[in-house]
Image (tube, rainbow, N blue to C red; front, side, top):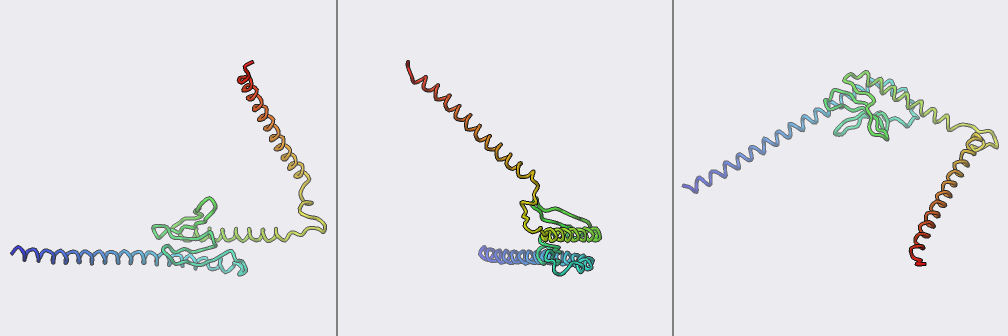
Length: 198
């Protein structure tokens, strides 16, 4: 009789364990569904922002390689503006965050639950980048008169200041050498006096 009781107990344990495993799988599937739904909601909100910005994107010249204007799929969807700036949704999935990666770290350029302020800041960012690019292009095409080099265009004050810096550095090195040699000689004379018994 005790053997029958022992045989029944493992069957109940297996059934209970399999039931818990099934519940855990269902809970994991539900969580995955929620994550997928949240990702899709973020993607949809970013698509709405991209539609709002479509006239701005259309005004950017096609030959300008600086901008991307794509929505990336992944764990966190992002609307890429260029290689360093993008719009992503905050953790609450309702707040737009316009972020820019810099040498000092990631900066938040705009953050709002309303789409309009973020769209305005993105438009301003694109305009600033286009102006910077135009200035760089215009700076590269600076025409020099014949026979003149970049050295000839620099003011004459720059050359003496470089020489002045060189000679002041050289003077410091020489003074340091003299002080070092003097201290060595002084310590050696004291040492010789200790060794000399007369």
